[in-house]
Image (cartoon, rainbow, N blue to C red; front, side, top):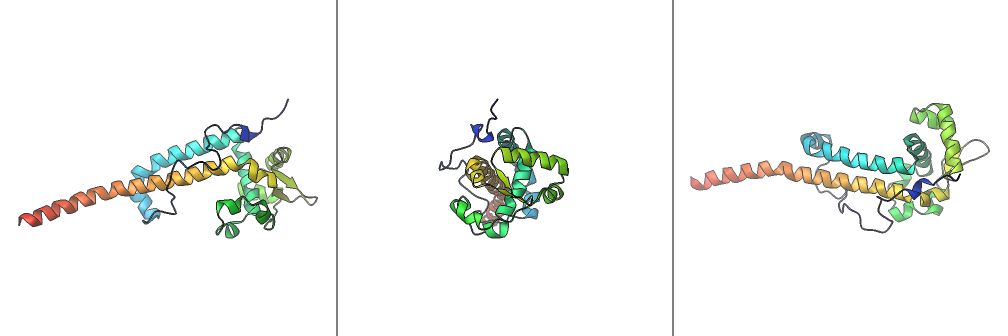
Length: 198
């Protein structure tokens, strides 16, 4: 019986190169984006955020055989292949460049993955074996793990789903901020109206 690859279940995820559902990014919003602003607009933001987060998790769960621990372990290993300090100035196209990432490999072992994730070491070992079978990671002779070149291409739909989630957060926050400004604008109009009558 052949094992179906997780990327064969991506019916709800847009294909590479298609226009994003959400044209705005949280990084393009010309407004404060901090804890105080989020709590101020909590009623507008939180329910929509949970809905978008659930959609992302549903898609990831489909791709990883219903095993979110498998996804988490791969993500931790992947973070060593491309640390945040190296990714900060990258475009999406550069991120997908196998050659550029290969030069920045910082392998991690099973024990470190277990400590980082809080998942039992034996469970991590089993998940790592499965990731190896899928061709998403490789293990060196000294037990160090790293993401394969194939993983970037194979899991591009997961990356797209994550980008859609981030774009959705931008829309949610932007719309919530606009709604929050409406009462202030109405109040200002009322004050101006009173002043003109006097």
